Length: 493
Ligand code: NAD
Image 1 (spheres, protein in one colour):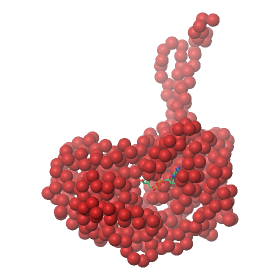
Image 2 (tube, helix red, strand yellow):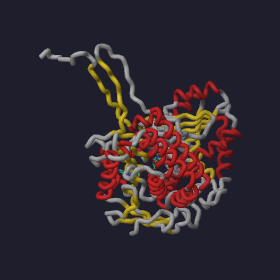
Image 3 (cartoon, rainbow, N blue to C red):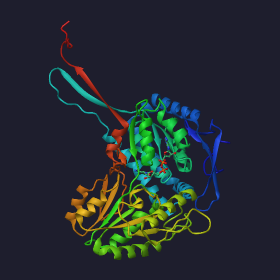
Image 4 (tube, rainbow, N blue to C red):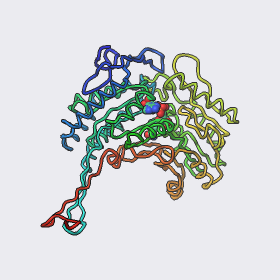
């Protein structure tokens, strides 16, 4: 397989040491567009020898040019990469939309965020600094911040481009080098971004992208002795396995995992605002979002009204061709995933939930599934506890504020929560009582460069997008200096 430029001949190599290369594994995978079933591309899959090459390239870059690149130059390169994403946004949007089946309107918003994320970390570099502190005697203390080293980054299929930027930007800002493993189904935009990074002057070996199977290639990358830190985004189940793998040899680790986020609607909320936003909060990206507000909790007197308004808005969404700018919801990632989503709906029905709208896959091409609203749901049901990861919302009644908090906190996850209320004090009260990494009060959006994003409980640990994310890619080294006329001689020898 020739190692060719992406988006021209539809064959994609691995990206190692500054260039697209053929896989030593000899393995490739045929990708089809989930929305049409049409052939999309042939991609290379990495095996162990490819991961070895990528890690070696990352180690050499760290020991060589990149390790000597000063912060202001890294900042300039991150801005240049942001500019390159802007210049190539049409191609990137097209690739992402066709690869994931996601509505191009969503992809465009994600691209804007990707650009802002690189710009944020280009500026955030200025915050990397050590400290000095008086400690008395003839002692001088100062600390240095150093990159943790080679980082293995593993990202899922639901936001391949955005997750790549969330991972790359802070790692590069901190001065690390990266071996990134995208999901084998969705490596196209990550490969293109690695290529763009090299085109704007990021030295070879700093960004390497090796698509490959999770349990074999991904696990090999995690265990690799040349990898100093692992940053993972994906399911809680895989996150737990990665944590085990990180024990030997011991690795630094951050985990961004699943969610079952609540969206609370109180009787004093403005429903004209709350309902359309809440519909967006579950159905954008076809519900394939970690922070999808998949549990809508409604104060009892409003329950029937909210269910029917929600169902009406949900069924009016424009579902179809991801490349049509009017489309609001594209397809799911695959027919297999659609079957999994439908399985949840069927079991929910058997447990007693009412399918108010949706709940049946349409005939015809593509992995489409309609926006689905399930009412009469109890928080103990499987559909309220497990991440369905599709366009399915469960609507659950609550009695009062105390009951709402109990239900909101009644899952193993804790990623995000939205509260709709006309009472500002109530909004802040709930923000302090809901166990989640981020809370929106009358505000559906979740991810902003500069605002820490991440989980409580089984949704993981570590934060993305924030200033504190840099610390996850840095070591602190304390330096102690004797400034006395004579050095210390503790044994008096
Ligand atoms: P997944 O855990 O199955 O896979 C994620 C990645 O891990 C893929 O690249 C996969 O190839 C790899 N992988 C799988 N097994 C592995 C192993 N044993 N060792 C190393 N790598 C392995 O998740 P998914 O189904 O692709 O993605 C959806 C999940 O990601 C959902 O649970 C979603 O909530 C979560 N997610 C979380 C965030 C966040 O920021 N918290 C963002 C996006 C997605």
